[in-house]
Length: 416
Image (cartoon, rainbow, N blue to C red; front, top):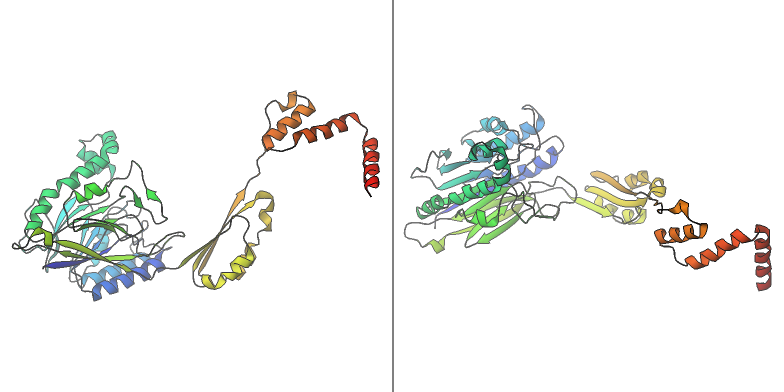
């Protein structure tokens, strides 16, 4: 059965702060993808973490790996979040290509993978007969682009962006089905949030502003849907078709769960004699050597004995200590001792939550008797045995202090 193998990378986040992690993991991924002999590489957005100078070490490191890839196969890069990947950056970075082109999908577009030529952008639905795969791209859209689809009504663009995106993706279905009947693999690319996907911190992404739905993506009738933006690997399957996030290439923040890596996709395509049931898409998630994170959490002040017991585990790791302590004891936390114990950690972050003592004044406290004040105070603070306290207050109000002292001494003496 004809097959095509695609390496998908996403969320590389090259920048000065993440350079070591991003480059170590991406370099390992590129080396493995080349060794596996993939037919093409697709990068689904956020190759950088923020705007970079063209001559910066992070830009040079990213360009070096893209150049390695373009020596052996075509590369297609999808526009990611604008705050991470400024418009125009991918056009600049694509100029480092060698044997094969590095193509850029920075707008809604469709592409054909042509052997020995690379990804060729389609003008209409005329696909070269030698093409082995077609790709429909839905990159991050700015408001102006969406407004142009709503006849310039910006308010409508904000309100109906999800519906517009859904309509475009579903509108590709007939084209994808026709290409599948002709024996070509079909792929949808997007950079965004699938409703109810899980973040890298284990949080379900539920909300009205998430632009992609699983039903919409399967409604495109593509063999594979390759996504970027969420940093946790996850996938959905239906009838031999697959939607997946590879997640970020490396571990860039504390608290991230799951392995980090990239995806090798294998898409079985049809020949004219084959039944559609023989189609199938599979993927292999390939982990990268991402950094080791260790989180040590205390409900109260940090326990140095616990930290000492876990010191070996923390060697060479990125460690985060979290604790909570009452305001009056904040200076009792020995941060210097923690740093000394964990001196072999690659990085140490100490996060202390200070519990502020709040005092509440009971309404009307200044207009009532001392006994009523006591009862109000006991109610606000949840103090028990208010009647016993009231008796003592009455004793203080009606009896001289010397008599109270003499009675107490006599009582203690009698007991002795």
